[in-house]
Amino acid sequence: MPKKMIHDFGRMKDAGEKIAWLTAYDFPTAQFAEAAGIDMLLVGDSLGMCVYGYPNTIPVTMDQCIVHCEAVRRGAPDTFVIGDMPFMSYQSSVEKGIENAGRFLKEAAVDAIKLEGGRRILPMVRGILDAGIVVVGHIGLTPQSSGQLGGHKAQGRTVESARALIEDALALEEAGIQMLLLEAVPPEVGGFITRRLSIPVLSIGAGMHCDGQLLIVSDLIGQFQAFTPKFVRKYCNVAEVVTSAMKEYAADVRAGRFPEDEHCYHMLEGEYEKFQEMVKRYEV
Ligand code: KIV
Image 1 (cartoon, protein in one colour):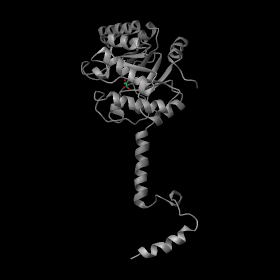
Image 2: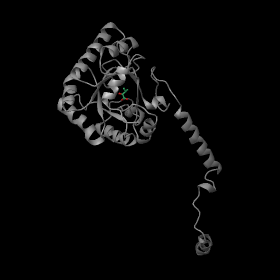
Image 3: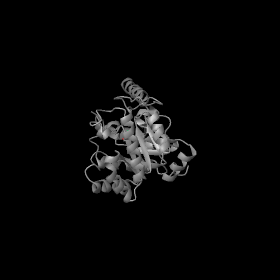
Image 4: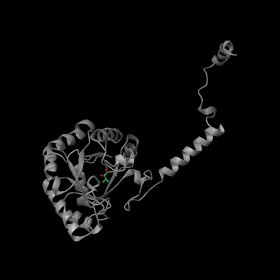
């Protein structure tokens, strides 16, 4: 399948074709996603929780994000890959935001970057866009500022909160972002913003009326154990499959059922007889 680029997602919105978006953090998962025909990949800062076992995304660094983006790029050379700007990689100044956004492209060859926030990060968004970088916005539940939101809570559930989201979405579109992600927002609000904006509006927990969906791959495959958000559908249970395979392996080792002859490297033809002769001098 030819690689989809940013304008293809706009065309998909106009044609009413839904966009299937997933996170990926490593080479094999990126290969699976590309083979599965996933439209876009996000190397999310959720890697902090899904890969490193941090309690949240706050400790994630630029260097970690770059390393994982490089692996995903190698695994999915023909898929649109988005790098996620981690906490404090853009909040402190426009210049820092532009430099760090640039690192994603220069060092990991991603196609776009994503950053969290609405009107209050417009200067950073404009700076990064002016540098010629494709920007994906992210509003609603924004985990990097979940402290201010009172925890990992759905947003836009009151008229005032919904109004703030609409204002943020309009301001980001006006600034020139090319796609917008809504996280944990009522479907009514997700649907309204999707209709109102001309750029693709994607959902992670923002309902069925958006132009496409994002899921965290570790949730989709049943790998992430700490908690399961309401918006997740698990399509398989890798944790169960892998744990049971490991238990079986340990039992086989302990019972002497593994390895078997088929797993062994035998000596070359004629060498065994010489080997028996040679070891005689070592026998006690
Ligand atoms: O880091 C990530 O995977 C994200 C999603 C939660 C939207 O930003």
